[in-house]
Structure formats: C-alpha cells, structure tokens
Length: 187
Image (cartoon, rainbow, N blue to C red; front, top):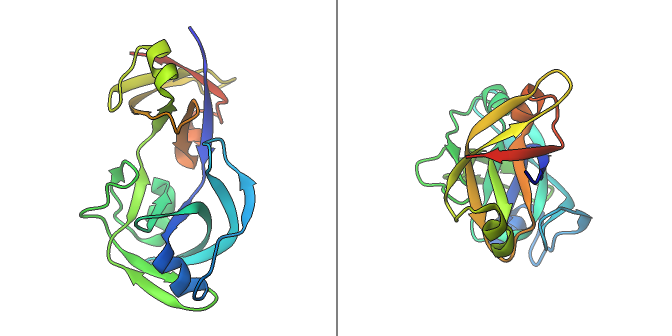
C-alpha cells in the first residue's frame, strides 16, 4: 500500500485581514518565514499572544489571511491555557470558545475560534482517486515507528485540487505515535 506523508502541526493561529490589521497596524501584510507543504500556505514571521482563562502563549501566524480568525491547539495546549476547546475541522467554528489576542499594535477579542484541529489528510482529486477516497470520508491510518506504532481512527479526508498529499496531526498525536513520518490508510 502506498504511504502518505505525516506532518506534525504545532499550535498556531490563522488571522482574518481585519484582525491582522487590528493587531499589527492598518494595511499590514504578513511576512513569509517559510513555505508549508500545502500549496500557497506558509508560516509567517509574525507571532501573537493568545490569552486563555488560565495562561497565555505566543503562537506563530500561518498565512495567507483567512475569512475568520482561528486558533488551533493540541489538547495539552488547550488545557494549559484553560480552554474547553472542541475537536473540529478547520473553519467549523460555531459554538467554540473565543479568546483575547495581543499583537504589537493592539489587542482584540475574538468571540469564537479556539479549536483542537481534527486530524485529516489533504488529497488532490487525482490522489483521492488513486487512494479510493472521497471528500469528507473518514478513514483510519496506521503509522509504524520504533516503539509507538498505532492506528489513528477518525481521520477525515479533505479533497481539493488546491491540496498536496499529506496527513496532519497535532503535537499530542505525534508524541503518542513516536513522531511518525508516514502512514498507510486502513479503511
């Protein structure tokens, strides 16, 4: 069976243009730090402070800007900061907690947007056909590492010609599996 790249996604934040400007100044644009595996996506130089009920943490901004701001955490990060964040797909923000964001030029409160990102695989249409999966389908992925091999269940397949083939897991999941580099779909 063909292997899929597995990438670990550390805590980070996506900002809307309005929130970016409120935090960094009018007309502000993100500065690319490094490209990410998904086409057009990048880690920015900019960081913001996310203030939770119990603690705060500085997080890197990922670009480009989005329609809505969202904070993506691992469960451990959420507990440390004091959030009761649900596991959600990116962009599914209704009913999620909000938070205070601090930047160099301002401070704002977002009313929703703190989530634990649901593990997922990005597929191009061609890759999805090759693997025999559809957008929104839930699969399991087996990862093998020296001492912590396991199978991740409840992995959502996300299909778009804007995507490059890669599975994304958070730092808690990566640590539990011994930082896997590749996996195999087991439906």
